[in-house]
Length: 244
Ligand SMILES: NC(=O)c1ccc[n+]([C@@H]2O[C@H](COP(=O)([O-])OP(=O)(O)OC[C@H]3O[C@@H](n4cnc5c(N)ncnc54)[C@H](OP(=O)(O)O)[C@@H]3O)[C@@H](O)[C@H]2O)c1
Image (tube, rainbow, N blue to C red; front, side, top):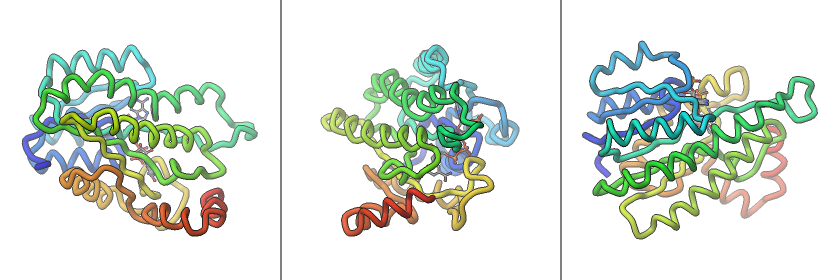
């Protein structure tokens, strides 16, 4: 797919990987509809001028997601690509005193349910385009969880399964489904933890390359090791990932 002159919806567009995708895809001559929960970094995004439209939407709210889709139908009927980048990760274990009971639903809804809602609501629009794509930003943790962030890992596992099933459902259509399984990337989500992180600029470039080449399931960085290592030494991989 040639990535120029396309209309692209990006959720999580004001931070981390989503921000870099927004900047790089706009620089290639695409029109970006940038969605975020807050208006953080909007001044930086506004420098992209008429290549960007900013939309504030809390993806954990079904009403707001439905309103967003309704607005897109009217304002951007020719939508080519949806990049589902927004997510949150709450790290305390269920036993930790700081575990936030009310966060369970928000995390699952933001990371998974909202992507199903958006897919269902936007597919009719995507189907009107010659070629279209849904891109889901997933994680190596979808394949095997770590000890913390249990709900996050489960939400990414659900997204991994959904991406595969949606790809089956859309096999005979013009809409492709691309899942990107990421390693640790240096963004606000991972601030203060982990080492050897990839830069969001580099990762955004690799995601763009995957979209251009219409790849379906893409493991980046160290996540590439997961499928072969899980086949060879599943016990060892489980042990390593558990402690991540
Ligand atoms: N960083 C990593 O190491 C890593 C590894 C594997 C997978 N990933 C995945 O890559 C994607 C991007 O991650 P990142 O590290 O770039 O994250 P990030 O910098 O923390 O950005 C998260 C984005 O999600 C948005 N968001 C959060 N809750 C939202 C809500 N309820 N409604 C709308 N938007 C919401 C945020 O908007 P506001 O800023 O306005 O709240 C922000 O734009 C995520 O799907 C993440 O799971 C990241």
